[in-house]
Image (cartoon, rainbow, N blue to C red; front, top):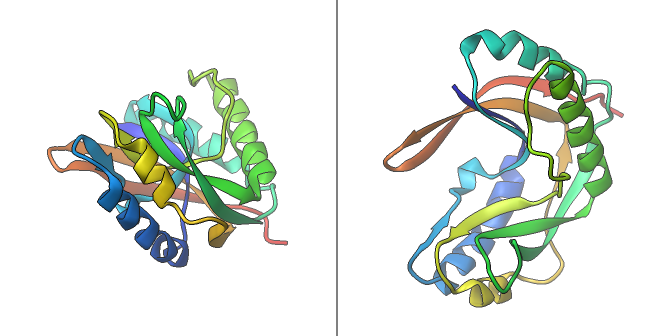
Length: 183
């Protein structure tokens, strides 16, 4: 099973981001694949292929974050990884709630490592991937992103998600949710 932990976007946030993604799509050239709005999420920990027998340990790691408080999250700004000169990933950033999102990812990753899961060593950087770029066109896409806050939501739950790769792209299914502590 190909798995990851994510903070899913609310339906309202997805609706608000749909025109931003469409504007970037219009500005892009060939060789850019965009995240479908219904699959927008903040990846907290990518686990890759895992056996079904790992689900109990993964659930225990997910429960480790349930004591953290829910928080407000605002999405704003655009950028590219590894940078604007050599873009491979186009992303939207976080203007509010980033420190809470980082704390959430850090606690989750610590709980996963305690249970023997191997994770990336790069520090977590809050971002919402909206496109993968095979060649050029990032400048126009980045300029297409409006200034200021693009969407806002209350982060109340993280999810363990299964990703099934297919010819039409990945299909995501939530296996389990883990509610954060309401304020």
